[in-house]
Amino acid sequence: MLLATQEDALNLLKKSWPLIIDECRSVLGSELHYQAMVYHCLRQTGVPREQLGMNVKMLITKPVSLLFQELDIKKHIEYQGAFEPIPDICIFSPAVEGDWRRRKQEQTLKSLLLAIEIKASERHKGRLSCREIAFDIKKLAAQRVEAQYRGSDFLPVVLIIDTAPDLKERMTEKSLKQVQDKAKQENVGFLYVSPVSEIHRL
Image 1 (cartoon, rainbow, N blue to C red):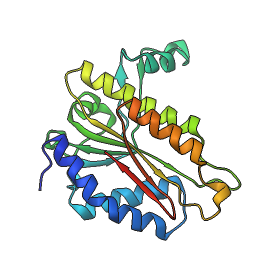
Image 2: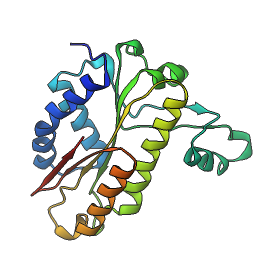
Image 3: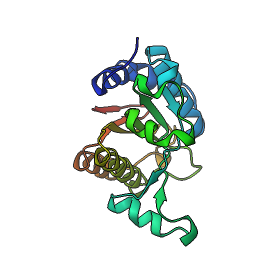
Image 4: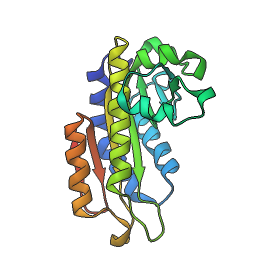
């Protein structure tokens, strides 16, 4: 079944959420591995392979969002004038035609229906911080500004896989509350799973 709208993409993500929870609680691995698991779950739930990308580079020239402008000017002067977000998981409209190579950046951004940034608790004796997750939330919000400026739109989502068995390697309640508030403030969907709880706000 082709996904034509943001609502179609969102419904498939909601449908896949129980499977994502089950899969991500079953193993311990790297953030990249969890990205692949989420990709697998979305495919299993019905997202067509021609509409589902992973680590998709989207070069945005002459950014208009304040964040991307700030990040752009930090680069060497020879490379300024563009910023390239790389969402972990992307669901596209059929217009992408199964081709989201870097050379197709305009069509890729225009075809984007939903983008997911994934963060995972994988550090030995360390935990995910509010600061790094908030930065990903801000990047998603900025990319949405860029899309809207160019006449399109997509649904941004942050997904936190906080399944470390050691409580000391999982987010604190304070940090979790802060990133939830930040996602709400930026109008970014929020998904969270730990060994004992999950949060679903889309």
